[in-house]
Length: 406
Image (cartoon, rainbow, N blue to C red; front, top):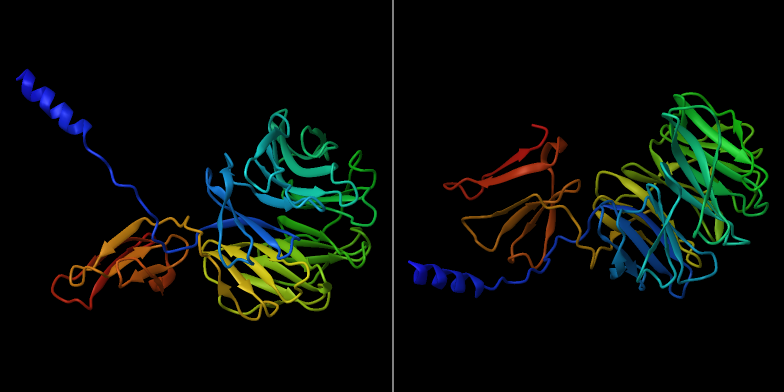
């Protein structure tokens, strides 16, 4: 008996396991991104999942590869340093991320105990001064808070903006001309909220905002006129022409997660608005849905490119997409991004080289060449992610799919 047992252990110790290689489909949930003004421009994007690397493209999105080390939590936002092409910043929860070697390594710096950051504003005239909009758990409640660094993000001082409670803060922006002025936005005490500081974040004033617009997801100060400020809300884009004193609703598109202007033409603006990108050609006065070609359930980031006024990128739950005609048409640019969540893979019993899979928050995909190439198939009924795919053993044309919502 002892000999038999020892023989079994030796046999098990000799077992080797094959390595795994991703075969797609390419793409995956993109949460945020940044453009570095190199020649050609370098793009960075981060996934909406913890522990995945930041991806980098040095060829206009034609190919992507991990920039380096994975960050411990996915960044809510990535921001490029205004002058140092190797330095980027990110924030997740109470941690501020910083890389000075183009993403190879990331250092973490605490924003403060119970201080959760969501967005970053870097002083373009003095990049050592950085602001992060936060909400801080203080005396049993969540208060709107600003965190400020004067040494490039290595240490932080938090300032409570208001004594009001039950806050969720999302956005911040700095005046590019008068960098003493900073704006922060969110949802406080059941209503939209915008705060402004005119003294480098020392004191803050709450500004009136139109009712019933809910979350202020994004803020942008116009590079053409620093008295013009945009706020992307749950229920539209609002504009102020008097530096935040009063606001007018300019669009009805929902979930405006990120607003950007073309660096070469401030009349051209884009908003990442849930399942579509919206575009303005008159400096944010009017907005219309940009063209088709994107996929995925949610678009959270949109990136304009310096020196290429007609080029714009967006990131969705399906990956990255590129337009070279001001958003009129979009092309998938996901080569090298393989971070999709695939809960179901089914092989057709009538044709072993044909495979179907579910790509969560995207579509079902089909391969007829053992996974070498994949084509999107859509999701029937659009009532939820597919949780099972089965084939009729007697009818090769009949496929059964079970969706998560019914």
